[in-house]
Image (tube, rainbow, N blue to C red; front, side, top):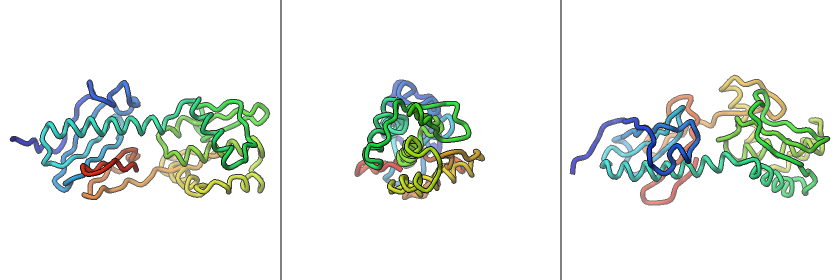
Length: 232
């Protein structure tokens, strides 16, 4: 059976699961990259306006098609988890308040805001409303949780005083999330704000040495043909 060993090919996403109807607008093209160093694993991630799928060079076209479809479905599922609706944001905020603030912070509304360009979140304590920057979409869940918890704490303590930070210290990933945001801000040149501390996760090599291009936010997954998907 003939095998296509071409190093790379770009195609529009057509009638495949995880295509344009199921993914974010930043992934309307799929680029398949073959690697002779890659033996068992298949990886996929977003890069600008494309979805990059990394496969072993030995794959047939049929195998390529199978794994491209599988990885698109998994990426789409991950996109959905990282891009919750306003209702899901509100439910998550309630869960965080119950877990870390003894339910004391009760927001009247929690919603995405696309005009928050200099800060990650804001709130109006008098109205108990919380707004979260749409720039957080696609970031790790623990980072979004930190921003939500930060604004929830502001409903109880408007100032960044000692008691405010004492409330946030209950969150076990506090420093990790703040470090992520600080790094993102430094890499992208964003000004810092209230919770405006961010960062690009480092691109990770897979077990065969392939890695996303420099500057790419590695929102993706890696799957081993022998086992389940491992998100990263």
